[in-house]
Image 1 (spheres, rainbow, N blue to C red):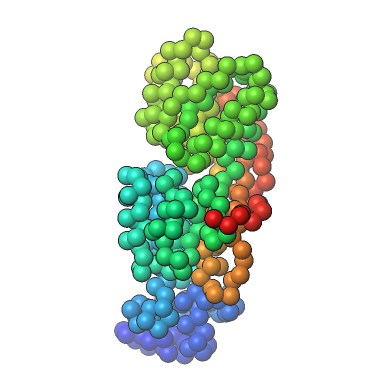
Image 2: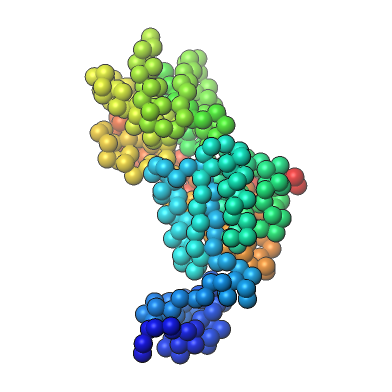
Length: 354
């Protein structure tokens, strides 16, 4: 049959299912078997059926669009995070609207407000978000999931990375490899991930390298700041035996500074990062790092939000923590992989009301 102006009835007839079933599949409402979902989507694609979004929104009161507000859209971390969110959204018939908030709290507030009325729910990752920010800028009935956030609320689920445990595991490995003078390149001071990673570094140094001087050099998660930190560390006497950067981008910038100065990694200084972005395994030497399953973080966050879109979901808000591993490559002289913390998200007790 012709694919021009195909209707929902055409899709139902070709797929041999009811119009209601087609509607449930294309609206991501569930209640349809995976086999039927597959058939309906294949038929809709073959017939080039395009739902009337405006009419559908008037009928259902939904836009079938999810908003994501992130600190930035640049770099491998955010690219991979968006990929995980988008794949999970598309599997549920949802579209994704993305904005950044890197210019401060007003920019973050503007990004959130701009999405009101245009999305069915939001994923928010921003260092500027606290309970007061949410109360002022987020409509009361709009579902939202917070990522990498210190906020504790009975209203908003939170999904965090176990940054502290990951940092502790990496410092423990470096110390057990014989390094006592371990320097740390920190991230932005107001960033929750960076704060937790530095706390992990300090706790692990106290336990595994007692008496060793703490060396913390400021960074901002960019390659440039890692390069500057690397040059600063090379000028210090004595020079550190190992450097642990709070993310891989800074570790890579630091690696370049070391190479530029003729300092061998790991022969002269061991080096490690955090995140395990794709390029980490392809630099020379390959970078040891704390592996965050970034796409999984996005996928799980979207799944949490999708559950909130259904009025029948009564799951109380919780703070879930996504575990990570340390991956030991050549940059710190190791050859093995060691688990840091469990991979599956774990729930913390339900937070107190805010």
